[in-house]
Length: 444
Image 1 (cartoon, one colour):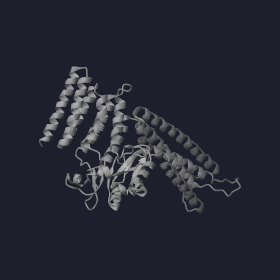
Image 2 (spheres, rainbow, N blue to C red):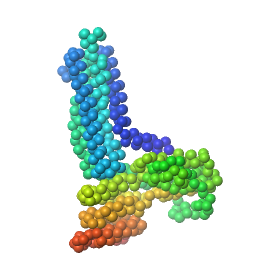
Image 3 (cartoon, one colour):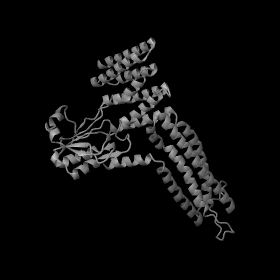
C-alpha cells in the first residue's frame, strides 16, 4: 500500500503547477545565500574577463532590470499556458487538461523565471555603495551568476515559444496519450498476483452459498477508484481467513454506501475490518492511469470523436487515433491478461477481482468511433485495417471472435451509413482482408 500511495502522491505533485517551480525557487534561495557567503568570505576568485567588475549603482541597475523582466516574462508565459489549456479543453476535451498539467517543460519554464527573479531580489538587497551608511559590498560572484541566470532564462524563453506551439498540435497530444497507454500496458500486463492454478479449479473453491452468506463492505465516500492494493487485500483475507470479491475495478465510479467488497463469511465483518478494506482502495475525484488502462484508451477515443463531430469534421485526426489504438491493441493481443482469481502463498483462493478483458478493451477503443464514423468511408476503412493488423498478432480463438464481431458491426454500419456504392465496395474489400487475416492466423 505504501508504494501505491507514494505513486498517487507523485502523480498529484506531478500534475500540479506549483511543485517543480517551488523546488526551483527553494534551490535559487539556497544558491543565493551560498554564493553571497563566498563573496563575503573573499574565497571566490572572480578576476576573469567575463565576470562583473562594476560598482554598486551598476549592479543595482543590472539586477533590477533582470528581476523586473523576469517577473514580466513569467506572467506572459503563464498567460500563454492558460490560453493553451483553453484551446486544449475546447478542441480535445477537458479530461486532457491533466496531460497538459503534467507537462514538465512548462513547469520548468515557469520555475526558471521565478527562480531567477527570486535570486536577483535576494542578491540585490545586499549591495551597498559608499554613501549607503554600510560598508561597501558588491558581491561580484553573485552578480555574475545572476547574469548567467538571465542568459539561461533567455534560452528557456526561446524553448518555451517553440514548446507552447508544439504541445497544442493534435499529433503531439495523441502521441503523449499513447505513451501513457504504453506505460500502463508495461506496468499492468502481465499482472500475476497469488499463484497460478489450473483452469477451472478456482470455480470449485468458491462456496456454493457465497452470495447468500457474504456480507458487503460499503464505500465510505463517492469517487473514482484510482488504485487498489491487491496484495493488502490478500493479506487481510489471509489474516482473517476470508474470501473477498471486489465489486468494482480501477476507473469505475463508486457511490457512497454501495457495496465495495463482498466478504465471506459475512459474520466476520465489523467496523475495523471495513476500515482496513476501504484503506486498500484509493478514491479520487477523477480517473487516473495508475491502474486504469481504459482511461488513456478513452482519452484517444474522445479526441477521435471530437474530431469526427460535425462542428470540427477532421477525419485525419480521427484516423491518427485509430492508428494509435490499433497499435496498442496489437500489443495487448500478445499479453496474458490477469486472472480475476487471486491466491495467497498457500495456494488458497483469497480474492476475486473485476479484471479487464481483451473484449472490453476492444469495445472501449472501437465502439464509439465506429458509431460516429459509419458515414465516413476513410475512417471506416482505417478501422478495418486496424482490425486486420490486430488479427495478425493473435491466434487466440476468443480474441479472434471479438475482432470478427467488430468487423461485422463496422460492415453493417457502413452499408447503412455510406450512400456511395463504390465506398461501400471499398469497405467490403477491406472487410474481406480482415477475414483473410483471421483465417490465415487461425491455421498457424
